Length: 97
Image 1 (cartoon, helix red, strand yellow):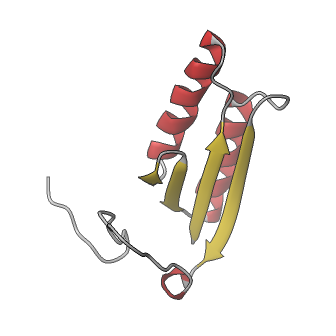
Image 2 (spheres, helix red, strand yellow):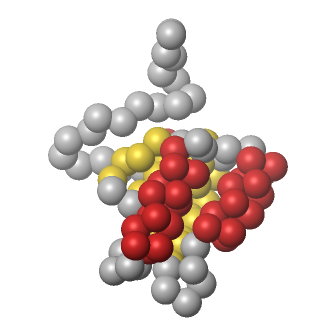
Image 3 (cartoon, one colour):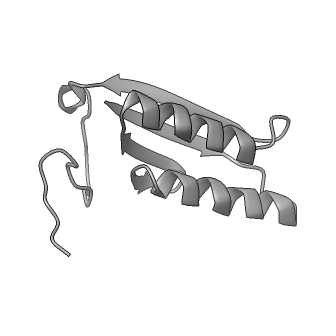
């Protein structure tokens, strides 16, 4: 399933800037960055639960905001792009390292 993770982390303090980096690093482990604070993540239900636990441990509930949008299995018909599109389709594109 595809989920869209968006966040707004308070960065006024040094701790806030550290949380921002940690949240981004966590999201990179599950998907790809499509905008500064937006990640597309193709995950299983178990991976989603794991990611939510990790993210909830990183954010400050009083200062930060995190939203997860569930786009499901047929996400390709729900995602529309306008303008520059440097992203890849994780279910179609193959990378060889």
